Amino acid sequence: MSKSLLIKNKDGKDIGNYDVPKNLLEYDKGDHAVHEVVVAYQAHQRAGTASTLSKSHVAGSGKKPWKQKGLGRARAGYRQSPIWRGGAVAHGPHPRSYKKKISKKILKLAFRRAFSEKISQNEIILIEDLDLQSPKTKEIYNIYKNLEIDRGCLFVVNEVSENILLSSRNIKNIEVISAELLNTYKLLLFKTVVVTKSAMNVIEKRLSKESD
Image (cartoon, rainbow, N blue to C red; front, side, top):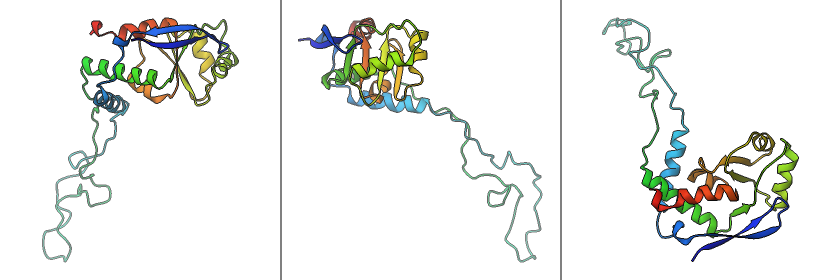
C-alpha cells in the first residue's frame, strides 16, 4: 500500500495527491544506521586543527636548569617540562581527522528510514514547484507562510537556482538544498521538509533498493 501526500501550490491550496510506493519506505529497521550516519556527519564537521606543543617542539636545550642535588630545590631535568610556564603541554591535542567511514549500504538505509519517518509524522509537504522569476525574499517568505510553517523548514528542489538561493538566504531557519545532496542529517535537522514534485522524483530513485 502506498503513502499518499497532498500536493500544494504556492498559495498553500491542495491541488492533488502524490502516491509514494510502500516498497520505497522503511519502518522495520534502520534506527541504528540513522544514529551512525548522524554521528559520522557531525564528526566530519570538526576541523581537527587543535594543536599544542609537545616537549620535542618547545625551543630549548637539553641542559639541566640546575644541578641535581645540594640546592634544596626539586629536581629539574629540562626547561621544556610541562609543569613549567612556557613549557610543553602534556597529552595535548594535535591535528587529526575525525572522519568516520560509513558504507553506502548503511547510508542508504539511514536515508530511507529517516525519510520514511518524516512521511509517517506528516512532516513532508509536497509543493508543485518553487520557480521564482526574480530573487525576492518576500516571494519565498509568502510561500513559507502560505504553507502555514512557523518553525523553519528545508526546501528540497531538483536544482538550486540563483533566484531561490538569493531569496532564501536572509530568512532565519530556512535552507534550500538539491534532492541529490539531501542527506539524513538535514532531514532530521528540520521539523518540516518542503519537497517539489521534480525533486520527489529524484528522491524516489535514491530510495529505490534497485539502485543499491
